[in-house]
Image: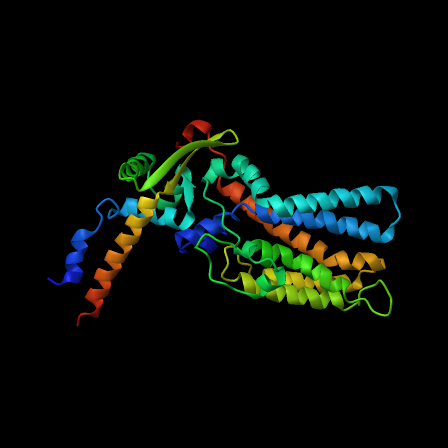
Length: 234
Length: 105
């Protein structure tokens, strides 16, 4: 990540700095993992008494994180990142001005200023859209999505992920994006209950985002040990 | 001398210093940043950055706010309206002079 932001403008470096510790990816990754695990369990035991409460709790967590992700991440960063490498204003999300997520996914408007990111709409939300697309491929009254749907949708997600983020504050390499497509093909061999299949994009997204985030976090912590309080310049 | 080159004498001397120019550029792009971030981005020593921030604050170009995030004290710096206008004027003058020099055979 540090290599990717070298030589960029100050505003774009400020936007990229938001992702330097991997926390945004870990946040969305864990959220998607929790949701997908819940979905997979729901498919095999849909009538469990505790499932209703688990779905309510997961929905609340999902809503809270999607609405207040900046505040939550800022709270964590204040304890982890800012003491090590300093604070800069978090980047704006230009897509907040566009109420239709599908329209904002397709558009590439010029940034309001340099310190902006499209991470939430172009990276995190994309897996959520993929889940919806997979669940729409049911046919003939069956609850099971078509067998080809996950690999095909995940290939599209991988291509879009690479294409949309290549000039963004948090770009992903071709190989990293290709891992999404490969994971989609791997799921073909996985026999799942009908209802669980639609949650596979979220599972892939959760694993992919968490892996990226954890890798960034480990590298960040190794490169920036916590300074002694007295030596922090203030 | 042409008017384009003579415009250079009107450059704002407060901004026209490499360290202060770096600080202004970072703050213009980022919106606001704390002392540690500015120090890392600009590659300045603690004392050097402090003196340049004081100079910019004295000129009214930046606002400095001391606050806490968690238990961590932060010195947040951001461009003031006067600073934004001064930086825009500085950029315009400098770019104008350089372009007029380039267009000359």
